Image (cartoon, rainbow, N blue to C red):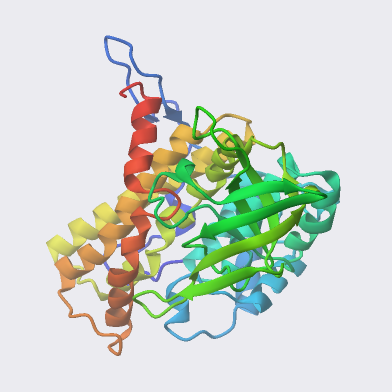
Length: 415
């Protein structure tokens, strides 16, 4: 979906496909002579006629339903738009891999991948349903009671219910297992006290998937954690939006002061929250949003590039090649999920590399074009200004860079 006036005269999402050729090297970690590390292989996932049909259909949907958008909202997909979410749900584009009994279409994972990258490429407003459809629906279908699934999951697929995720806490930093928000058992349920922070769109959502401590004094800090579905309209919940440097209020602090949650809203088994949430993070870390968020600025650079400038040609070509590799890796993880393989180590690698790539795009814009930051400038300057400010969060969201690299090192037997 890139505009193609610049150096890369013909580049688009669908023609970066990595086909499964016998002689093509796979991304892998080679074992040393000491054989201390396991092999990691993310195999290419070839495109299919069905995927390309889905691509044509979602592009047609976007042409008919996205409508005109001002330059600011078109920059980034993290806009909260219930109306557009409902349109996606009505057209069957939400929960499309889910069973039909929960409002899904039983479609393959890589067809959903196609839909996501087309939505992200045009900066469609996705935040209303993003967390619910990406990870909360799958979490509930895997661990929730049938009653809880029946009440919530089909409405996520319709674009009617939005979720936020209650993980991070004040003073916890990157150590998620150090959380102090606790739930104590009472008659008919639990009472939650504590706080969460950096909770995306908590002031606009219907429910939170909250990780809290239900047992104290255990030998491991990873033990005694449980997950709950919390109704955000429950009494004694205070939500305080946090304004960021680009003027948005997408984050919020959430404070629980004796908030009652019924037993039926416990997700899975008491004390199994750590295992459940690490499984859930696979969906958060492996998608195309982890490398396509800065795509509009890259597109602006391609529009502005001089095809006779060798430095621009080389640097933009490298950026596009890197983007193509990340896409191939992310599609490979989608194939792993389809085949029932465990992609947790691979997702940490892709998420980390994707964050590095996305943070390099504003730096590349400064290097090649040297424009000053101006919110009221032309489209390139406005995009450059926005991503220079916003991209600092890419090394934090979905797991900090240091934590991800620790996971990778441990998975490779290096620590």
